[in-house]
Length: 544
Image (cartoon, rainbow, N blue to C red; front, side, top):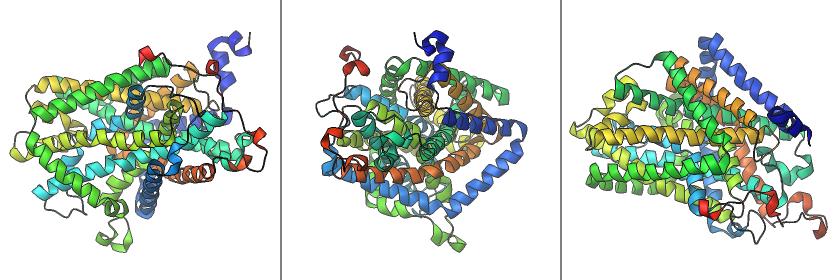
């Protein structure tokens, strides 16, 4: 009997820990929680100052890195490296495609999609993006508003996750490297040196970024759930209610992740995608179908034609001193930073479930297929919101002014036939997408703080679930959506650099299919790519 078995769950928890990374992560998260409890105004002031500096002085950096990542992923999809297998050459994928796509999409930006789907386009319709330059609430403003939702939630967003996932999956599934972010430096330091101080620093940054990114999502979508409760019951939740409800959601996703990928995350992901598709189709059919198709088609064409321009637009021509405009900082830079802050856990999660697939399959599924599902959602929700606002059937902008962006979906669905039914579906979707995104991130934090364990202990996951939930609720109480956006921009900054490092790792490794640390050695030194099926989980095809 091993020591961990003898000591039970506590023994397993202590034995598996990567102590430096775990301690740094817990200390940072706990310090943030205590700061917002003891000195909320001071903590908010410091966070606002750092945020303002980043979006005015470094906004161009976020834009440049994201565009370079998009170009590189396009090369992976259409170039020769797309055939590289993430595992043994004769290995089949661990998960069926429906299961794989459902988990990938649900764990990615899906929770945010539910939050911003009904809100962003109608917001841009009223406050027109500077690049569009149209009169507020005009026909041109409508198309431009949806165009920008496609841009913010399309291929750029998904690209960042794929770039982080691929080198980790390559080394983990071909060379048995640990499933952690520091694995991306393996081409230069070798697999035997992934416990170096540099590796610990990278993994600690990954924990830092994940905490901020996930707390942002839990807070945003939790606020949408709270507004929904207030909208349907007429009762005010208050600060205590906010903490109580988000704590409840935290318990839900912690229980889900404790069940593991196959019993918890995969099954909820299937449910998410069915409900997501149902709500999209029903809203499209019951809503202004012709208008959705017309404005959506025009917006998609503009998105394709102006993609490069939008990718490099900083708004410097509209502001003195060459600073990034407030609009670009508050929207595009915020989103790019948010996606970068999500790359550690989404990249790890995608890497974890991608065994047996090729680089092209992961890149195409993660970017093209995910964008292909996202665009109809934003066209339908954004087009419906703008149409109902313009025709006076629903005053969504007034609700946003009173309740914030979190309240936008409820007047939209209420104005359509079967409004109560759609509102209930929307509330359920908010909850399940939040649970799936949060539990996959908690799993990733467990992997990061245990040296790459594919199944971290339940105690580890519960600790991270509690800390994320606590931070999200406190950010909501003390600063609301603005505080959450600031947290995402701050924690996403370091990972813009790590994303470029991941690109460099693939260039070095895929160039001749032999990493630097193996190139001057005999072929016999290459690790065996034969993987003993008893050493990894297999999936009963009947469950897929």
